[in-house]
Amino acid sequence: MSIIKDPGLAPEGARKINWVKRHMPVLRKLEAENSREQSFEGLKVAICLHLEAKTAYLAQVFARSGAEVAIAGSNPLSTQDAVAAALAEEGMNVFAVHGATEKKFKEHLRQVLKTEPDLIVDDGGDLVSIIHQEMPGLSKKIMGSAEETTTGLIRLRSMEKEGVLSFPAVAVNDAFCKHLFDNRHGTGQSVWDGIMRATNLVIAGKTVVVAGFGWCGKGVALRARGLGARVIVTEVDPVKALEAVMEGYEVRPLKEAAPLADLVITVAGVNRVVNREHYSYLKDGAMLANAGHFDVEIDKKDLYHYADSYTQAQPNVEEFILPGGKTLYLLAEGRLVNLAAADGHPAEIMDLSFALQFMALKYLKEKHKQLPFSLLSVPPEIDSEIARLKLQEMGVSIDTLMEEQKKYMESW
Ligand code: ADE
Image (cartoon, rainbow, N blue to C red):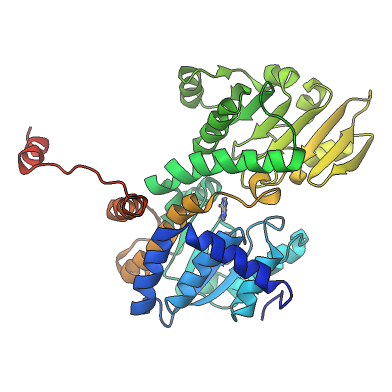
């Protein structure tokens, strides 16, 4: 049963899917091979991802490769109803609606799991977490899961450490073809896309504080600099902080950076990065945006509480008047700004991430009986093969080692 069956909306979604498909050549290649072989015939695949056009194409590739697919969004604000309707129109099980309440959102995740999947594509670890907390019996049937995000991997690592993980999980986020491109270049570009669409303001000349210098933070800072901003990085990890210093960024504690900031972007993967203390340091008119997976990085509950009043300044921009008259702006309700206020990462980037997701599930399907119930790396051959295919599609050729060089590399 699907949530959205709206033949009026579906054509718009179908057009969006067609557009991104044109820019996802690696996934198209996998579709061609696997639909011929019906590689997932007889298997059920559950997907929890941001339900926009690129994700919809991934779901179609699984379905055309023989899988029965059930899909939910991974954030109520990133679900695009037209795209969901297009999938429902094809007969897919779609459980998602834009702006769903937290309760409805969770209900949709449970509905996806009630289809009793064999394989899971997760984003943020929500499906895996629900299985372990509420439906432990389902674990026996599951061949494995593949995780898309840094945040999801943190949760899975905790589960592994506690010895409760009850099927193999593949850390797609840790593959080179994921974090080097999706986290850095995908987030780097799409976060600015979201901020610019929401605000329609210039970035050049602004002071931007990037809270967190992981792979996503690196991308956001890099593109901020390219847009002409003064960039200040905040970190808790000394190695990452040193890396930021060596890359030429100013590094300060958030308390010191806040009074200088025109815009603070959280990309830290932890809660309450920006909290009441910082609201008092921020200057009048400062804007706050989040690019981390969960909407916990900016303590918005505290902001609603602390503010004398708040109102919608324009779509995706809330205005808060604080005691004393200072104004702060929160973008996209503190949810992922690149997906709530824009369309997420560019298609060419998601081509890599989703090719990895597809190959990770194929690997789990073929090897699950030999795999331990732990967090596993994507086999390096899969990473290399996806990079090779992408280069081929881009018309870029590279050198190969001569036999003599191979021997040299193996010698000691
Ligand atoms: N589109 C689909 N999934 C996404 C993700 N995890 N990040 C950005 N854009 C996306």
